Length: 276
Image (cartoon, rainbow, N blue to C red; front, top):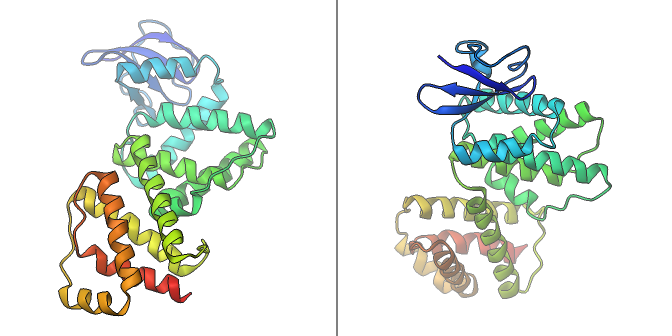
């Protein structure tokens, strides 16, 4: 049985749980009319968001000092929509991370401060499902708040969704995004080009690099292509050597071995860029 310890507002209550001791329950109308000692077990169960982690609770309580009930209700609807779309229970940190991010992002937009996201396109390529969900969220927020939200914000929201879906720290995901940006810089320097980020060859290359990072992290290596490797080495020495340089950068940043087979696929993508 879960008993109310304190109703913080109409949407948030502090409760006593037999297994987790003190928890925070979040849900639309969950705290309305509730008093200390009231039982909440089973009531609006589908709306319960339980913050069990003590540190998460502290951060969320700090959020409530400046985030109003209407915004909490809006976030409740957004997070419910994400869970329904992906049919999973999200990592509870999203209640803190995404709420905090969106509250201050909207505050900055209302103050006329711009939203810059140089990696928006790369984020869309890396996490297309999360990005599509983020687009819907931005559209809903714009309607609710009667506010134009810049396109760059979609990428930031997508990263929060991906973090909650994969139980990975946002900082870790951002490191991968920065790694891709570093690799693109190395490519431009070595090929003496300025890539067009709308070019299909660039988009394919970036998508491949993200997949390579995922495979390296998961130690899911591709088969060797010895015959093709020799042909590419002879025909496209510049791109082939550059592919190895990129692999060394990845290896240093990820602190994991990058298999030789990646040189073949990277060379092919790089060659398409030089043709363009």
